Amino acid sequence: MKKILPIVLVSMLVALAVFGAGCTSSTNSTKLQLAGSTTVQPHAEALAKAFQANNSSVQVFVQGGGSSAGVTAVGTGTADIGMSSANLSKSQLSQYPNLKAVPIAVDGIAIVVNPQNTINNLTLSQTRDIFTGNVTNWKQVGGSDAKINVVNREEGSGTRDGIQKIVLKGGNFSSGGITQSSTGAVRSYVAGDPNAIGYISFAEVDNSVKALSIDGVAPTYATIANGTYPIQRDLLFVTNGDPSGNAKAFIDFTLSPAGQAILKADKEVSISDASAAKVTTSAAK
Amino acid sequence: MICIKPSREVRSLRRSATRDIRERTVALLLLLCGISSVCAIFLIITFIFAEGLPFLIQAGPSFLISSVWRPTDSFSAGLWGIFPIIVGSLIVTLGAVAIGTPLGVACAVFLAEIAPAPVRRVLVPSVNALAGVPSVVYGFFGLLVIVPWIRGQFGGFGTSVFAAWLILFIMILPTIISISTDSIRAVPREYKEGSLAMGATRWQTIRSVLVPAASSGIIASVILGMGRAIGETMAVLMVAGNSVTIPDSIFAPTSTLTAQIALEMGYATGAHREALFAMGIVLFAFIMILTGFANLASRRRITY
Image (cartoon, rainbow over all chains, first blue to last red; front, side, top):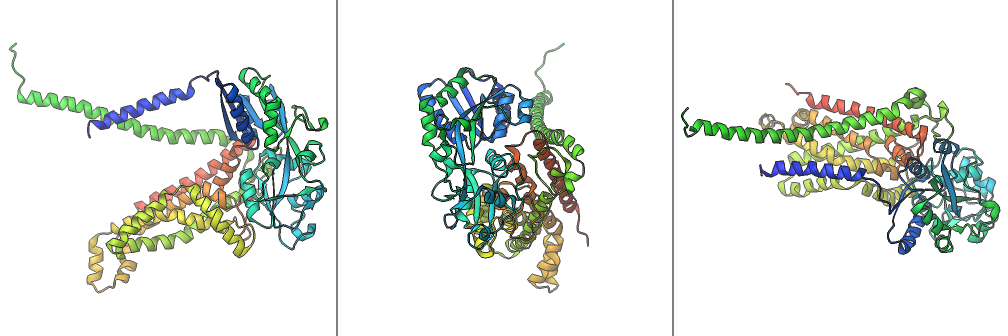
């Protein structure tokens, strides 16, 4: 026992040194790292799987973390491609001036309520009133007499950012709601609370929640593609400088018919189907 | 010079010399391990302060006393108020401790003094198992069982101060129970025997002799439990609702420092990120104060 102890200690130190060194070793050229938006993440994983089937030498790693974290990761060189569900902000562009963004799909943001809720349609301004806290009872928008339980995403979320820009027109969210940290958490909360309202990517809507029509237009592939459904944003791939090597190959694959078909299967609107006016170019506002 | 076989003394001296080297090597390695853990805490402190302190100085006291938290707006002093988050942290922590302490201490008294050996053999491992359950599992349980129950019984969101209390008090029980049990067991036998010999009943002995004599350990256990409660992140994040408002009832949602940091860290950039580190400094200050109290309490000696 006495003899084992120093051996164990030494081997621990050696292991530490080896692994420590391993972490800093230079990046392999056949490795492609994606990071960012949790909205884009599942699609990027599906794209990576298909991409690797044809390019077995390239290993694609897809990581979440959020839109901002993804942009920062690209700016600092930690990731090759950043995934973002919000346009690049001025501060991001001033910090990393070489950032280039490519829209890969158009994503609708669905306003979701519990399936028991009798409301099927809201106007854009009613939706704004609910999220800013001007309207707090379902009765005020034609529903039953019950308090509206607003479910938000956290500060910095691309989806929250989209709602703030498109629905709230830059106004502020009421502080009365609760905050859930992911699309899935918002959906499961709304599925469990008859009086809840929240917002999630259209691609993530399932039977557990009901997506409301906005101004009489239900969110569907067609209405998002032709721009009549008003709450939508571009999903972006961000690179530092013009994409090259594996990053370019991956982005080209994503924009190819095969790549767009994968996004389409996930209910994201293909860039080629989206109305030209809606596809904003990368550069921030 | 005459060459002689080394004497017994010399040989034993040599043996002790090699033994000495071996012992020193082991001592050195252990010292390195000790230093590395100290280095870790030192590095963490340095990092948090380097990232958060400039922001804390720039934002000034309004950071602590203002109530509006809108980090993604452009920088202006009023929008960086974490007062509701500090209040939320304190309410959640103190409430959980207030529920957990009587239960935990009662359980400790039972385990140390009353429980027959077979019962103890079942209870002690169960309490320890409670300590081993990952906090995300507590959170998930809270989200699926406690939150819907509160929503059904009391209305509102369900995710609330009350839900956080219910989850946290269970999580701090093992800390309170195990340390309190140890400190009650550590009371000298003579105290108990003396009390019983003077005709005191079992309950009088427990109430007037054992618990007061073990009070320093019990207080330390409560403060350590409080430290666990204030530091708990995942479970609270899942059941508290994370609303940056001062809750107006125990069934209203609230947010805590740890949960807010975890919630926004992934997305935070620039000043927002620094603000989260500044929140880390505030949290650190709370925990240092608690640890200080724990040390004071456990050092206190009962004298008769």
